[in-house]
Length: 454
Image 1 (cartoon, rainbow, N blue to C red):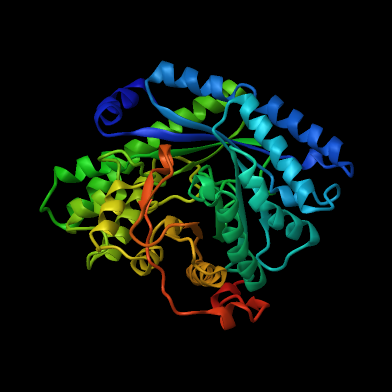
Image 2: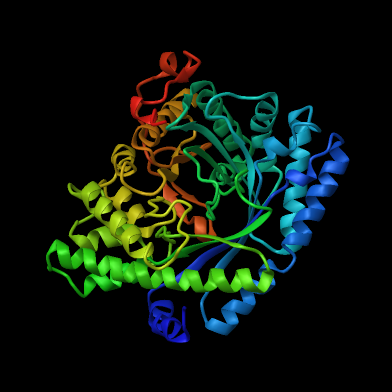
């Protein structure tokens, strides 16, 4: 059992080292909302969300007050909307209408983001999927809290390159429609390979079809805690380094376990998973890149970076799995650029490139995240970057994702301000050589040979 002494032990982490519960995410199934009439469907969705989630924010605040644990975000994920709207939606604009209802419901219950404007197209695109995907730019431009994700590949099915090509175009269109806000719409859009059903983090969260009617998933953040712990064993060997990370990850995860159990008990909704990911923020000292520096690198991106990140990721998981019976989501170390001050510094000093970030994604949680690129980057180039990242996920049997932001009107070296947890970022260069003939082939990249395990 978790006791109050474990909570008290974390006081210093909370007060001085930026420890927080990044999010309580309430997953809600919308399968029972399906209807052939669009107006009825919209009403069903709004009523289901506002009923099931009515106490989410209040519960989070009560837990914060009782235990002194900051819970930064309260969020909702829903069943992929392409599965829910298929009978009622006949045009992309119909799906935009659903996005607006989701946004209204999110505002009504007080959550900061709602994820699940999503489609699962790793092997093929249905008519409903196609309509939703074409609705994404307008939906993200005309809503405030709705997030979208598209799963275009998996280890079992391969990569749907038609979907990859389309998503390059969708990302560019989203950037254009939100160019007045530095193409901010793209920060709410993720392209996945092997997307998990129980991810509590945005923008990629959705409520998987294998989940129950409702579930509580929690994501904890603690890069600053890990960095502080490692600073006390500076110069020690790898064994000491690894033990320190594991012990720290255990303590961080126990905080999340307490919050998850309390939220589950108070709301009468089953506890799903704890996501062990180290999620950085723009705050000084709350950086995965600074952990890598503490391990011994002058800057993130220096030789040894991929090895150091692999070590960190593995030890976080080893420590975390001992602290909770139910670990899931993404679980590892996020390496977003705009949300991590150390990553921003590394880019500005020339230590970190998109190509090095891609190499790092082979061993970290997720992939190319919150990276600003020139606004004139061709859609096919964006699709090529997506394809590369999807291949890493497919072959390595892991979740990978791309959240690129082609900032319309800005070029390499210029700064982009997103605000809040999304931070700011320098516009990074992308490879100038074309991949149009590759992207335009059409069809699927087959699953790798090691995927056939039945």
